[in-house]
Image 1 (cartoon, rainbow, N blue to C red):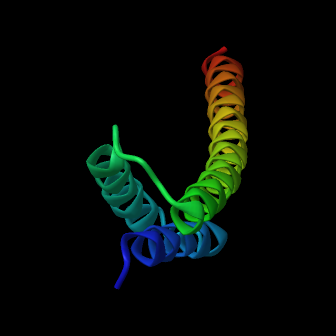
Image 2: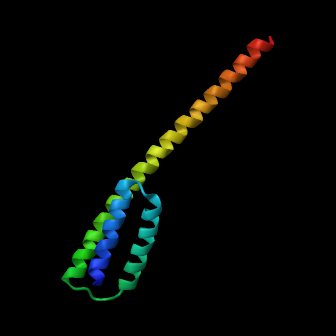
Image 3: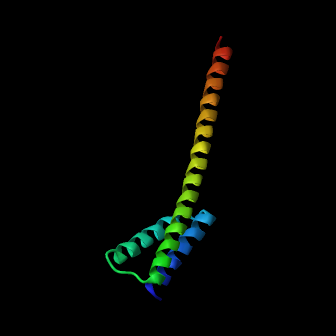
Amino acid sequence: MSEARALMALGQTLAQAAREGDWATVQRTDLQLADALFALRGRAHGAEMRQALDAARQLHADAMRQCAAQRDALAEKMALSLRNREGAAAYATFADDRTAG
């Protein structure tokens, strides 16, 4: 497999994993993509490789947007859980005060 095709395959794997919410694969593929890009550093690239680099950059950006959206959704859920827990604790304290008095 050519380096350009390998790069495209990594980008597509990253995009698919992000769409599916497979965050372990996203992390692993992101590292593989970084290693592949590091290996290409400082070399001249033909048209096929430039196209693969551009496509991989776009796929990576899309995947990172999906990761950020998921992070934000999880942060919102965690904040709601914390508010619910604090509310339950306050209610329990209030209920204890009423039964004690």
